[in-house]
Image (cartoon, rainbow, N blue to C red; front, side):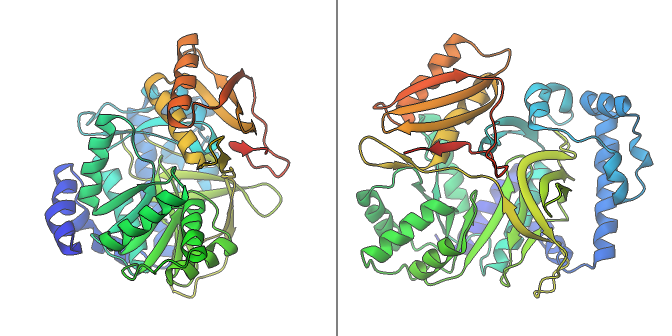
Length: 442
């Protein structure tokens, strides 16, 4: 589909019908990237005060949290005062979603189950304007990669199993002008098929998990497959992009690779520009890095626009280092020097196929969206046919959910594997501080 047909006949009308005025916000987002440091700080402070006051007035959870801490939102006079505001965690979202969320506009809000990359899938709600502003920040960053709304996309992502899920994915992909191929089916035959589909579909860019796109890129190079001439950029997400991975992907497709960092709870957090700077989307989120003595620390983020489930000083469970440098591109947004965490392995199946860890995470997110029955999980492949699943349960956990989890893993991952469920009180991080959510010990 031509990009203008996609943008004006599908994307803009569909998002507007959902209450997301993206077309009318984009110029604001293009302007924001060039504002100076002081103007950006003023903008952030204004939006921070707004979401703090709203949450205190309308959310039972935040009112109690701030009252117990002796904090009054109106006392925040500068961004430095944010340190006096208590943080929240994934456990808060899991256990207090009802009290945290606001009923106003509930018939127009969307639900999202996400956050599985840290082993704690969470559910929350988003109002249409929050979604619109997430999409605007992403679209602006994609312009840095030479792309525009409507450009066709080859997307390495999860493929739903249910009929309803497939129908929803089909409609979403049609509106977004993208072709979805399974990130979880990585045999030589499937990779050859993806290459042929890409040549036919003519994507303007390729998007997906770092490790999966690298596997596809190596397959193209190793088998001397023809290039995909329509591709202008590659955008990687969800995993750490190493220089080695970047080089392989860039060589296979003959274009630059742009990394992005975000999470389902708040959407886009940082994107790479054409000069290599990883810019924080500071007009949508306020990002803090809690110093740990090594120069980096845990990421704490505040979403300025989610009024359905306010997310204020939220600990992501990922770690990063902020840079005090200014990017050569001239944009005013601060830079992330590096992002740590999100370390997990590709699993090896008895059949010889490889399974991307997000396929495993999808299973747990699906269970959590239905049951809200656990606080955290970890998956460890101990041998080709033995997988250990560690679960920190909550009061909703039951024998039936235990059976549901095993059945879903057998259905979506492999029926040739024995899944052992171990109920634990704590899941430990590696010595590096990383949480190895999906581990392969082969």
